[in-house]
Image (cartoon, rainbow, N blue to C red):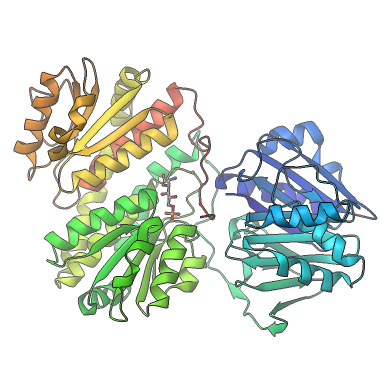
Amino acid sequence: MCGIIGYTGDKQSASIILSSLYNLEYRGYDSCGIAVKDLDISVLKDVGKVDEVNTKLNFLSLEGHTGVGHTRWCTHGKVTKENAHPLLSNNHKIAVVHNGIIENYLLLKKRLQKEGFTFYSETDTEVIPNLIEYYARSKSFIDAVQLAVGDLCGQYAILIMSTQYDGLIACRKESPLVLGVGHNEYYVASDIPAFAQYTNNVVYLNDGDILYITNKSYSIYNNNIKQQHPVTTISREIEETGKGDFEHYFIKEVMEQIDAIKRLIFIDQSIISEVAKEIIKAKGTYMVACGTASYACMYGLYLFSKIAHIHVNFCIASEFDNFKHFLTQDSLVIAISQSGETADTLMAIRSAKEKGAKVISITNVEGSTLTRESDYTILQKAGQEICVISTKAYTSQLAILIMIAYEIVGNYKEAVEILKDLIKYLYYLTSESMREYIKLLADKLKDKEHIYLIGRSFQYPTALEAALKIKEVSYIHAEAYAGGELKHGSIAMIEDGSPCIVFVSNETESSIISNAIELKARGAWIIGVGQRNNEVFDYFIKVRELPWLNSICQIIPMQLLAYQLAILRGCDPDKPRNLAKSVTVL
Ligand code: AGP
């Protein structure tokens, strides 16, 4: 998703904006730009990564104490320099950066064109500075902003900078926006990592808020009513020390899974028991999430069924609207989201709250919108996950679900014990020898067009997550099936040489090996993942059977495989094409 950052204060803004853009890169983007205000507004922007554009245009050449910056993940309009943000009004007195979607922009654009305005981009955003310019012809600048924002339909986080206003104005509706409060200086950004190096005093903006920052103070209004939002001092996240000795965040975060799960072992048990009680009490529990987090939910279905003997429902968040009529005030919705900003997941919990259901969230980002809209939150504390591809957050979510399931049956200690065993084993799974073996397998797979993955029971969501890892970072088409589904059509895809990855557990061994034999009979070559090798496997990744933990253990070699495939195929493991770390638009 787009990343936005604004600064106003005593310092030169360009250097602060530039470093914040680097901190926003993990959100995924295709172009970037900066605007700085001195007597006039100067804009430098282009297609490309921050490094490339800065080297070409020299962002630090811009002088001024107020500035805005943007990393663009395109929604409306192609990836071009003209469509990059910041975008200016016709009179060049107003610069805007925006994250979200203006749904009625075409109508507004036509209206402005009739008033003589010219448009130089294909973006929806460009209507915002020109609307403000139009209203400012006859109104005060602040009134012009309010009128312009009132015309907008959609979701937006907007930063407005103008030669007609000494400071910055920010508006938020369903796209994240947070204020950082420094000493005589202010930061406004899509999320806290953008300015965490400068301040950890934050003010969370709510939907409908308009933030006015002048050079020494700020005020927030919502429907013209002054708001008194508290200043929150956030706990210093496990400080992101860059990539350290690692080449990519991807592999760094795979290796950090051990620490992430270790931290969970020391979590306050009352946090877990609070959730367990709600699940027991609820008349219907629904888990909602997107992408990798949705596979964590699927894992949870099997876990609550087999450990806690509780039936829990699951729905991918973008489809939740079709089932929300089943919710009552006795329902419980559990949302899982690494970022806590995924628009589909937020929409799902908002529907749930409209029905009076209780909402519990499991997320990795303190202060995210999801945490602020949930009745209760379990913070994963897995450390900032910078890489667009989720790894440590996923296994951390699985571990939390295990702790909840065991707490439901009053055996929390057992959960802690099995996680301790897991941690010892994770050292093997992420060891140099494992990584070297996975490199060998990756070399055999790197030129394949399709990879098929099958699993049963807990290994079905594992197969789905492994397929997503491979797809999203190496761009190889990978497809996962429940083993029992093969005969219902999918096996038609198998031809001579089709690579298939088969996930095996003690519980499913006989049935999934039968599936592997069916694949083999049609020419497939097979990588087996599990405790015991088998003659049907051409290659075998030994992963010890740990009760309830196979999904954590077996996904790690797959994370390593996806990483190696990306490297061998010349893909950027940290910033895969077309993807964003947090999908904040519907
Ligand atoms: C993870 O590898 C993917 N990039 C993506 O599927 C992600 O899991 C999904 O967008 C949900 O994100 P969230 O956990 O922040 O809600």
